[in-house]
Image (cartoon, rainbow, N blue to C red; front, side, top):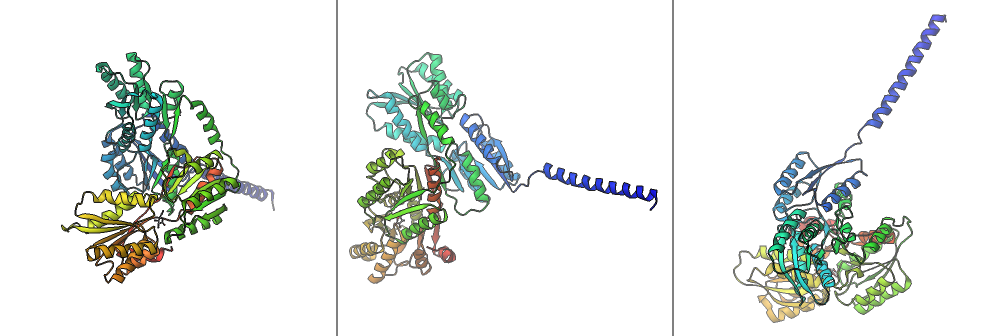
Length: 626
Ligand code: AHR
């Protein structure tokens, strides 16, 4: 090989090596520069980005979204205009978003808009609710409860001598303003020495509250003792009005508790207002659930209600301390021990519920101690006491009835053991005795059952006689299902409940009570409304024995939607069933694990539920395995 050829080979080799290096570098560059692949586009429609609370919500959404490179989020700000918010949503739809997160300005006007979007894509309603249930998920707080808490704070601040109160309301067409006002007024009206002497509407805005308050107080002879504003922005407006008028000594309550300049927490700390209620925005949870919804997770609840915390000058410093502790929750993954006091084994629903809890505990590696109270409250209390003595990490129970839990729950609280209410709520004065409720909206189930009756009977002018088979006396499902049913029926005077009998949620008792009703009313019965499937099945047996045809001579509606009901629907003996989801195990385990880590969990997780006609049941029957 001559010298020239060697030089050529070396030059060629060098060129090739250079080329390979260049291509590799380019590939590396294009990989490292390339945008991550976008799997989902989410649209966020904000009503305004002026209020500190709404700004905080947006920051939380952004922070959580930034953890997911496969998400693209488009944000809009309606600047307090409902028409602008409607336009924003149309623009977002034009971008082909996969899911909409919306916090509304005006609940009434936005309800049909959201309903239309929900027909096409999933919608998360955040912080500020709409009417009805036409959305995928609502995340927010209980605004009626905030109103009640404000009334309690008013009583504390005014003491025995009471006084005069002015209420500064948010937008009147917003569900949350209406609920806060109702909760506040209903509690205040029960007191003798506190009077609401004036109401001002300031649309959530600081400046409007300031101007309106100045105008009111200048012309009024009655100096109020306390002013309750539906949010902190307006509470600050109230403070400024009082300062400029040189009115001292008037207490101010706000709501939101944002820890930012001009946010409620800092206003309390600076003693500009007396009390606020920390109202979580749910921004973080909205993104987390959006991802689960888009990934077609089937266990998405209908409502997540976040807990409020009262902060006043008494506890503001403690609150900052506690906040730090909560933010530094333990990272250890120690196995959690959950003591679960099941109410009984009265129904097919309950069997499915117990099964779901046991299976989820195995799957989630939770040490589950489960005991059955056989539908006896004293026994259930004894079981809970046993768990407290054993020192379990978390207690769960499905309360047999609504009342009578204060003492034992106080013992759990004193022992530092958080309590999860499973499927049934309770009525206690102090809501801090329990941490979280996971279950259904029983009132809504009752409404849905009644709506079916109304729709079926709309052409009938004759009176329609209904027998109600109630669940366990004083239990939440019996009380609430009755309430929801009556609420819808009250505008239809020909639909009458001629008797309500307690069948205790069991097939045997349901049958016995139906026999009794048939003896008394015989052929005059048109409809049976059973609070659960088991009692409906019992009623079917009684009706057949009586010689009538269930499903045609007497129509029957029930609640639960278990396999038993689906079979009865498919043979035409049952007419309609409203779903009540018993598969609560996975959510209970997740809550128990988070509590063990010291995390704050939602106050209520309300499951998503459907209704089934005879035709729908035939299609769905195979999928229902309980
Ligand atoms: O608490 C839920 C109710 O309890 C179910 O609807 C009923 O079947 C039951 O046993």
